[in-house]
Amino acid sequence: MAAGLRKRGRAGAAAQAAGVCAPWLQRVWQERRLLLREPRYTLLVAACLCLAEVGITFWVIHRVAYTEIDWKAYMAQVEGVINGTYDYTQLQGDTGPLVYPAGFVYIFMGLYYATGRGTDIRTAQNIFAVLYLATLLLVFLIYHQTCKVPPFVFFFMCCASYRVHSIFVLRLFNDPVAMALLFLSVNLLLAQRWGWGCCCFSLAVSVKMNILLFAPGLLFLLLTQFGFRGALPKLGICAVLQVVLGLPFLLKNPIGYLSRSFDLGRQFLFRWTVNWRFLPEALFLHRAFHLALLAAHLSLLLLFALCRWHRSGENRFYPFHLQLHWHLLQPLPPLPVLCLVFPYTALPPVGHTCTLAHTPAQAAGAGAHRALLEHVPIHVLQLCCPARVPCRHPAAAVAGPAAFPQERPAGQERPLKPAPSSSSPLPGPRVGWTQCPWE
Image (cartoon, rainbow, N blue to C red; front, side, top):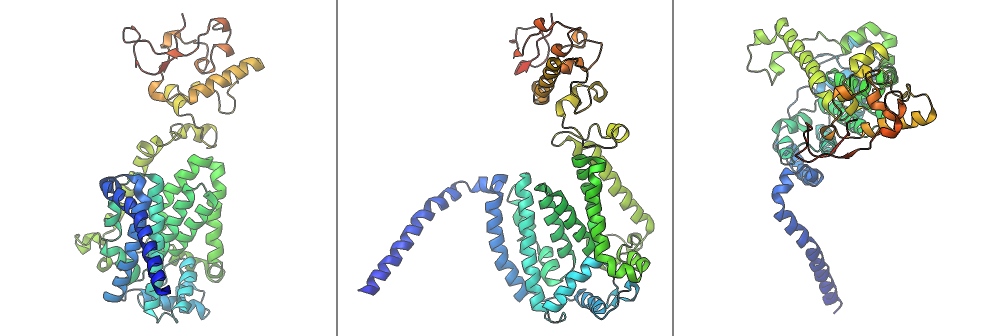
């Protein structure tokens, strides 16, 4: 009888769980197209893909043969440091000298001990599998915060990618460690944790130097967020961390450490390339090809900085060149409307909105008008024609008549009113709010 009651209890619990899940599954099926196209479902799709990746990665580790390329060389180089060799010019592996910064040595030294001096490949693969899932989660969090990519793309980014699984769990390269730290840095920067973000970025650089390719973007963000002076402490975090990590090697042979770990002229062998395999080897190894790639990279960075990056958000890159000369790159002011409507030189300095006002009442009126202008959407803003604007100082249109009684008595100013109907002779948009011209 007790057994029958237990069976009925289990059946009842299962039925209750099915009753709860059935409506949810039905809703998911009905919205399956939105689920794959709408970025707001990123977390849901990411959770499903992460669960699928657990099984796929486990299958790859146990069914696909491991390929030895650099792991033994990594372990040999780390073993040299463990044995007391701190001169970078004396550290060698099966594939050549040690050419990675100090952070690589410390991280792979931990892997050296965790894998029985590098001999337990299966344990190393399992560690890199966990690292892969953590990296995938960090990437999904970035896409969730940007809300730009439809979720169906994520399947091709992870589950359908043989190369990603190969790099992480079949080759055991150091690239996954560096990229995991980089994606952690991006998440911290998105969360406005600038100090920790710069710290993780520097850690990523200390694992592999190619992370420096992301440095121009970080520098741009720091300058637009903090200005030149405010960005110096954040850049100092990156520099100090590099010095602290490399200190044992710098004390032994500083020139050898810097020339080996940050060698910008190092040649990449043609047999290891994947993206440029279609080129002839002679062209791939030619110095002119390398310089052309560098010039193209710098040109694209400049093009994006001038034509793309400054248009996002609050458009604070517009007065960037003026800030360089006038204010030594102080934090750039969030004036999206004013920077587009008026020349930058026509505005009072930020923090001195009421420079032209003469009394506290006039200063308060000027600040109110300026605050109103800053929050009016640009597409619905229609200003008076230039002939009606007072000509003594261009900023009078910003400060308002209350701050400039010599131009217009305060009693005659008019408030904002709805835009006129289609029969009005005034030009411009007919929807929204407009400033009434003075009579």
